[in-house]
Length: 244
Image 1 (spheres, rainbow, N blue to C red):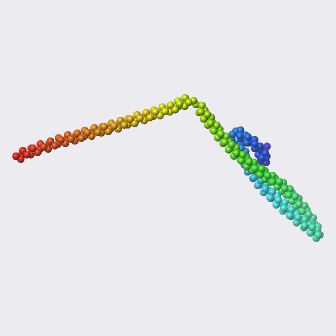
Image 2: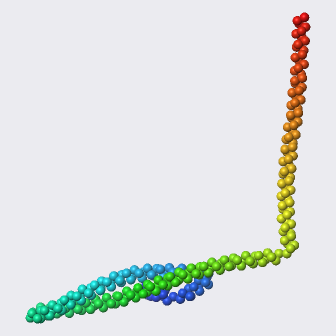
Image 3: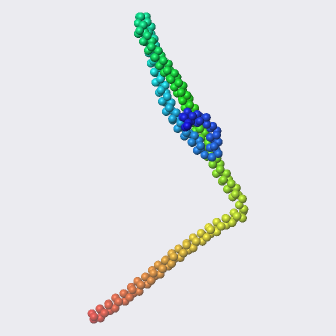
C-alpha cells in the first residue's frame, strides 16, 4: 500500500537532518539536501491543499450544528407552550421532531469536532514542516559555503605544493634555464640585426644608383648643349659670305 500524505509528512518531519548533512559532506555535494527540500516543498503544497479542504468542511459542519442546535432549542420552547395550551397531539409531534433535530445536531457536532481536530493537526504538521524546510535551507547554504571553502583550500594546497617543488630545483638547473633564455634572445637579436643590415644595404644601393643616374644626366645635357652651340656659329658665317 502506498504511504498516505500524513505518513510521508511524518517521515519528512522525523528525518534525521544530521544524517542528511553527513551524507552531503561524504559526497561533497548538496544534492541529497536538494532532494529533501524538493520532497518537503512538494508535500507541503499537498498538505496546504488538503488543509484548505478540511478547513472548509469544518466551517460547514460547524454551521450545520449551529443551525440544528438553534432549531432544537426553539422547538423545545414551542413544546412547552403547546403543553401549557393543552395541545398534546401537536406537542407529541413536536417532541418527535425535536428528538430528530437533537440527534442530527449531535452528529454534526461530533463530525465538526473530529474534523476540527484533524484540521488543527494538519496546521501543526504544516508548521513543523515549514520549520524543517527553513532549517534545511539554512544548513544547505552553510554546507555550500563549506564545500566552496574546502575547494579553495584544495587549490591553495596544490599551489603551495607546486611552489615547494619549484624550490627544490638546483642552482645548476636554474642557471641552465636562464642560459637557454639568453641564447634564444641572442638569436632573435642576431636575426633582427641581419634584417636591419640588409635593409641598409638596399637603401645605400638605391641612393648610389640615383646619384650615378643624376651624373649621367648632367653629362648628356652638357654635351648636347655644346653641340647645339657649334651649329649656330656655322650658320652665321654662311650668311655673311652671301651678303658680300
